[in-house]
Length: 185
Image 1: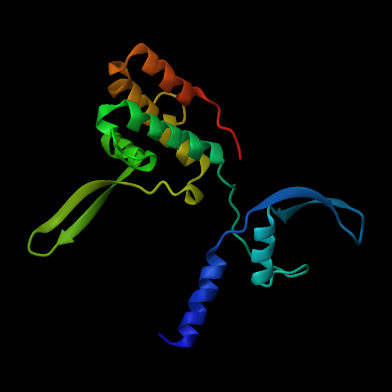
Image 2: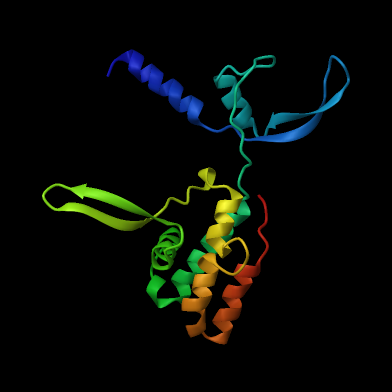
C-alpha cells in the first residue's frame, strides 16, 4: 500500500464519520435576523468539523437524516435482556444476541440471502438483518418492534408464541417493558 493510498483511506474514513447537529434558532450577526441553523451537538462534533476544515463561510454538501431516538435502542436491549433472563430458548444469551435470536425465530427483520457454493449449487437461507442504530430510521424500527401499529412485529410474535407460556407476574413485567414510552437521551 502506498503512502498516498493510506492518506486517501484516512480522508475517506474521516469523511464517513457522522457529525451530530441540532437545528437551533440563531441570530445572523450581519442582519440581526433570527434563522434556523444546524449547530454541532458536542465539542467532539465541533472538533470533527475543524479536522475536516469545515469553517464559518465554507459551503458544504450534506445528506441529512433525523437521528435515532436512543430510547428505542435502550428499550430493545432491555427486552433482549429480559428474554435472556426469563425465557428458556433465550437463556444465557447477552442482550444483543437475544435480539438476533428473536429476529431469527420470528423471521421479522430478516432477509433471504442466496449463496452459490461451488460443487453444491445455490443455497438460500434467511439471515437476520443488521440492526445498526445509525442506519435505521424510526419507521423501520417501529415496523420491527410492533409492526408500526401495535399488532405485529416482534411484540406481536412474542405475544402469540412466547408470552402465553409465562406466569402472570412475568407477563406483567414484560408488558411493562413493551408499553414503556421511549425516552430520548
